[in-house]
Amino acid sequence: MNVPFYIARRLALVKQKTFSRFIIGLAIGATTLSVAVMIVAMSFANGFQKVISNKVFSFWGHIRIVNNLDEKVSTAEENPVTENLQVEKLLQSQPGVAGVQEYATKSAILKYNTDIESILLKGVNNKEMFRRMQPFLEEGRWLNFDSSGYSLEINISRYVADRLEIKVNDTLIVYFFNPDGSKRARKLNIAGIYKIGIEEFDKHFGLCDIDLLRRMNNWEPNQIGGYEVFLKDYKTTDSLTEKLYKKLPDGWYARSLREINPQIFDWLGLQDQLKNILLVIMMIVAVVNMLTCLIILVLERTTMTGILKAVGAPDSSIQSIFLYNTGFIALAGILLGTLLGVLICVIQQQTGFIKLNEEAYFMRTAAVEINWWQILAVDGLTLLVCIVTLLIPVLLIKKVNVVKAIQFR
Image (cartoon, one colour):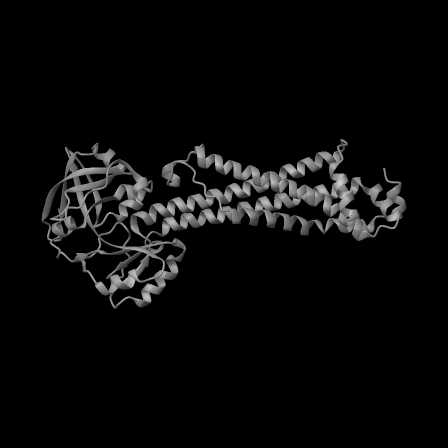
């Protein structure tokens, strides 16, 4: 029989009301709260990153392939370039690529009655993008493509629709301006209204048929603004961008969306830093509480320690008793904290009771993504740190004098 383990278990099960029992309850509660906060913080941070990344990548793809390397932001027009089959084959052959899409952009003025709004129209030529953006569609439908010509439909954001006071199926006039100062106009029907939730995209963009932009810009039928590359895993964006940059033909360049929209990804990086800071603070809280609990247990059991020493128990066995005892406490706190943290996350997933300011956080409801390996890592690391840290105060047991300990009151 493991005697230290047996004694520690009996001590943990004692129902006698003592000051140490209160401290034990406090330590379990603090550990529970710390572990729950760490799990909730990580799950919410995961949700933030996933939702916002999906919004950005669904609209613009993960990597843009362009024919001129400049510092244009996402709200600038692309210069036209001729389609390149060699580039398309190279992009489609890369492992991890989910899709490749041609696109073009053109500044335009939308007019409805007496109201006008300036936006950047993004032209696309297939419905694959709309499948990715389906969660953002609020009213109507995505535009249909006309195989015999170009579509006279348009999708606009909720922000633009509210500014123009326009609804689905209404018709507006779109003005396109050429470099020589001339303008061309087309009447387009509002097929649907979407809301991405990212201010920069909702304020400045609309979606139309790429053939419409070709016609309005007097481009050739095979001219585009560039290619968008959609990946299966966004974590491979940087490595694949660098790889494509080296493999593309002369004059073609790869730019990750992180380079084009650094402010959004800097914001996501800040969330990671805040998450790490919170994890460290909660870990310190858990350790300090366990240290306090152990010191109080050692002091309260001074008489027991003296008796055990008097009957020949080695210091290592006595130390093991207290380590086992506080290990039970840490384990109880970790298990309860895990249950509480997961419960909060599941409730948020099911009900969305935590609401956010969409202008500040790019979403109306706090998003949650539970990663079980992260939860196991938090539990294991918390238990390990607590036990390693607790080795320090148990050294006090070696200094306990047998006679004084037995007489201790």
